Image (cartoon, rainbow, N blue to C red; front, side, top):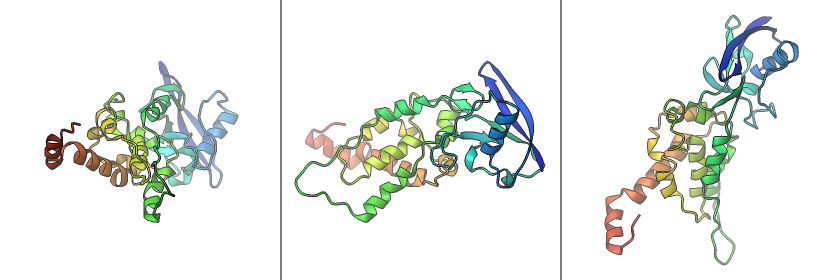
Length: 245
């Protein structure tokens, strides 16, 4: 069976959609199709990939406008007569073809206070429920698809004001760790703009690891920020004790 695939080609000032027709084999994924095109018709095609097993997060792209890992998206998921259009993630600057510059994400990551271990005597204690709660966030493969669909970043380009859902779950994983003593709420409020998220859950729907980004990370972090800085009883207590935020 043959089917048509359109790939975005070119650099930022010279973009085009090139159409290819390939022979489809059973079980092929979108990344297989791209590699076939690269091997037979477009040797200069640029695409980022690594493990081809859905664990490195490198091959993120948009297939028919939807954020996908191309190595985990089967051609058979789409009607046989439908032409597939593969484009790079829209939220990040384009380098070439299907490759975008995601370095901003690593700059944001460096701003987060790392794990601060509890000081004290004796062996620290963690309960299984506490382990399970933060373990979910460690499933993140940094594909940045959640960042790609976040309207604050994608539509409004507020990268200077909002860290994005990927770093909300990293912060949540640290803040919810029972042995961590780091202080991140003020940074989360002021620099990473958690108040800009209106919990549309598009990031959760896009996550290939099925992490409950909105319900399990962003909403609890919003609640902690509100409790810390906007709770009237705490505000009154801070006034009485002379503590200021």
